[in-house]
Amino acid sequence: MPRLEIAADGFRLDDQPFRIVSGALHYFRVHPEQWADRLRKARLLGLNTVETYVPWNLHAPRRGEFRWDAGLDLPGFLDLAAAEGLHVLLRPGPYICAEWEGGGLPSWLLTDDDIALRSRDPRFLAAVDGYLAALLPPLLPYLGSNGGPVVAVQLENEYGAFGDDAGYLTELAALLHRHGVDVPLFTCDQPGDLARGGLDGVLATANFGSRAAEGLARLREHQPSGPLMCAEFWIGWFDRWGGIHHRRDVRAAAAELDTLLAAGASVNIYMFHGGTNFGFTNGANDKGTYRPTATSYDYDALLDEAGDPTPKYAAFREVLARHTPVPAEPVPAPAPKADYGTVELTHVAGLLEQADALGAAVGAERPLGLEELGEPFGFVLHETELTAPGPVLLCAEQVRDRAQVFVDGQPVGVLERENHEHALAFIAPRAGARLAVLVENQGRVNYGQGLHDRKGLLGRVTVNGREPGAWRSRALSLESLDALAFGPADTPAVGPTFHRGWFEVDTPRDTFLAPDGWTKGLAWINGFALGRYWSRGPQSTLYVPGPVLRPGRNEVTVLELHASATGGVRLRDTPDLGVTEE
Image (cartoon, rainbow, N blue to C red; front, side, top):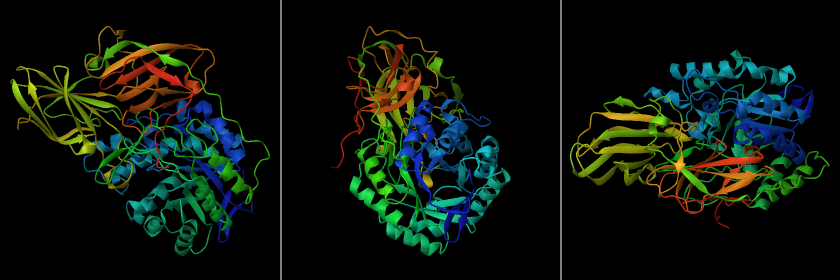
């Protein structure tokens, strides 16, 4: 593919004027067997480019590890994009935001209490150097300079909303160049942050979702010449637990796109297809109150969470056709969905009873955080003994993020970071009773100054005003459930419990798991982690990609953290992402 050039009057490709018409599609939020389908629909919309972030923390979940397997096969994704004739904007961070766990920064960075993230801290830059040394060599053949689809690479991400150290951006640019990136770099910031987040000699782009003319004017004021580009044209928004499901008026969004294109600007539609925060990968925000992001990243995008074109897809295609060539091929019809009915969950395994099978306990004088235990995601279980019977006041300086408290296996209460809770009173039945505190990492903060977001019971933890002095902590990553021993569900479960059942499939198709009547937890099908559910909503179903299923017998596992429902779970053919303001 030809090489992209940045000229005073705009982009040029193969020495011809070129407008980037892109859509955001994060490979890590889509099942890899569905990548080709989503990329084809991007081309049929009229896009000539797709954009993707790279999540450092998913590729390198532990220090010294780097993964390219399964859904992290970025070279495979780039091959498929090239096969559709699509260019690629690559956004490797190191920080990506994206409503993604920790903004893509790996949790093992947080083992240094005082590390300054997104800075010239030598420890941070050394880690970034190692990340790029692992990431970039396999990707160099995909750069436009080598005939590949990647025409430009983003430098950091909305840095102006975080800091203003041009020296840090200079160091990052030098690292990218040293590791072989020779295509144009660009930065992106909201219009009010352009001066703080830019770097001399690097193309600045702006992020906005409305008032397009004003946003482009601010960009031109900051950057008098060169291409005008909106690198994130927000056409929807993300959802948080306990909130509404966001939707944006189709006509208003299409009108803003028309304004942007009529001005001659390039665009990256955020999101073309949002996908799903599978497993434990959702992020969170904390602007005084902690708010975890939901599992669905539908984003009210042009393709819905299951990859089907929405009315917004048709409206945007009509707008694009006024400004750029659009393929004459018809828009694909929605893919068939399956209703597999109710799956009875007939077998159980208690989490507390089988904690030894899920993670090794480490002794210490205080509770150890998830990062200290070497695991990025999941839960941490803290245990100690109560020395006397009677009233107990448990106090924790910081609860990160949701702590369920048990005495001899019986639930006695919950402490939630979201509600600013730090103390819980209960009765100890005997001397030597086992106190267990199961803390869920509900997602690390992905935006702002709260990125140093360690998990577990942090700071001083006391029982009746005294620190116990002897704790056992274990990380429960739940990457594999193979070690669990399931038995028949003869009696109602007490406390966090894995529930398992089986169902038959003739033809694997997309479906939606509805944990009706359940409270809070996670679900897996055939070992694939679908993500979290929570009765507080907004979403009440979890998307199940068709490739997760197989002809014949399939397995459903649900970890219910509280009281389980009767009647199993339903696999239905329609989603429910919750109520909106409409």
